[in-house]
View 1 (tube, rainbow, N blue to C red):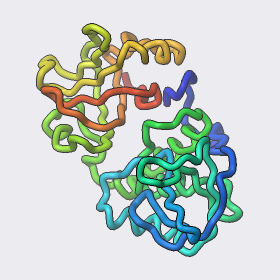
View 2 (view 1 turned 90 degrees about the horizontal axis):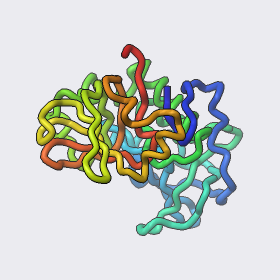
View 3 (view 1 turned 180 degrees about the vertical axis):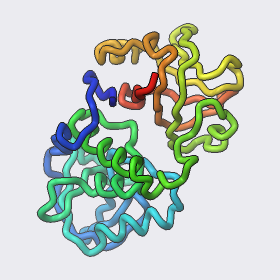
View 4 (view 1 turned 120 degrees about the vertical axis):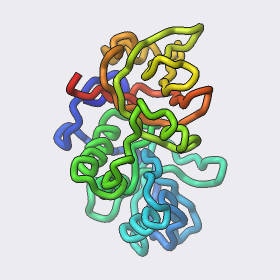
Length: 248
């Protein structure tokens, strides 16, 4: 199941209402700049919202996006069309006649990962369904058996420091120190992998029916950017970064 926003849900295409945000304009794609960014004929640069780069070769992932959008008219939708600090417009992108996003297609091909930034549960469910389909079929990045890192192998996780990473494992213990809750996956707190949850995030977990303490001895999948604080850490900023896995 996926914990998204304040709702615990199974991830299936049937319950994914989609990323139906406000229109942000249209244009023809003239150039793909990287695996998540393209330029329109009016000069705007568009950054694909809701996804993070996969571990695939960047050239391969860029080629995948290019094969989908280059030369096509696209419609942009989103919650906010304000450019980021690099002048790029973040948006969900639709091809003519399609009700699903370009992001979903990349996820189904295994050429992207669901990011941690989604607030909309419907959109998050659509994206998660695409990623799950590719993961089960072992497409793209998921063909690599090391695509999901083992929480019991902190050295492998640290090798991806600064990268968006997906980690799976059983939470050995849950401890609070000051304003931070630690989900520990090993007994050596200075070396082993841990997930950190700030005090301000705890109400969101509780609203989703899942207090951090309840995660003790459960298998979870967590995603986010890896930091080094002694051992590898992922800081949870949204409840949707954590999935509770079966087989506990």
